Image 1 (spheres, helix red, strand yellow):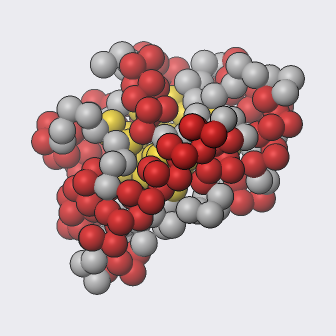
Image 2 (cartoon, helix red, strand yellow):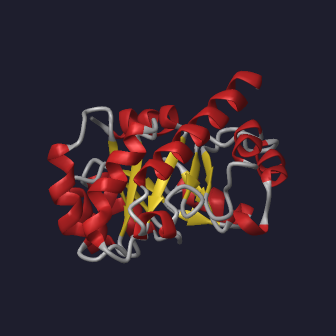
Length: 216
């Protein structure tokens, strides 16, 4: 799958699950629960213990519809390692040109984190496949509407503060997908082994995104 196909798959998913776990032993159960709920874009962050090894273990075993990515990537070396392990896209909380370049050299999509309009446009012009707007908590969906007025070419994905209550608002404002962390992968549910709760939330987020898209 090339970069364009990866981006299309992420957009089709509509929900990118941002997976942060203190105990990597729960990763497979979390991934399976998310997939069962209809979430296809799965972002394993570098804060998961031995994240690169975990991505390498997961990649060959996932259903073909799954889109496995690496998150919280801060440098080019980590981006290369993540892609070599099987990540098809790389997400960062910050904008680093060298990370975008490393991803593209390896055939993976790059999704840097940005905040201001200038930074977002700089990242887009540097080749970002999707710009992760972070932290979206401080902004709100109207920010996307304002940005996409003069800059309709942007592919934007909010992360940070995305909830079931506002996921549809972000999509209606022009987001190509929403990045969802603890509102989807609840640490308490993981710790208690309630993976059915994660599946239930996944179903709800996927439905919210689909409803918002149908209303646009």
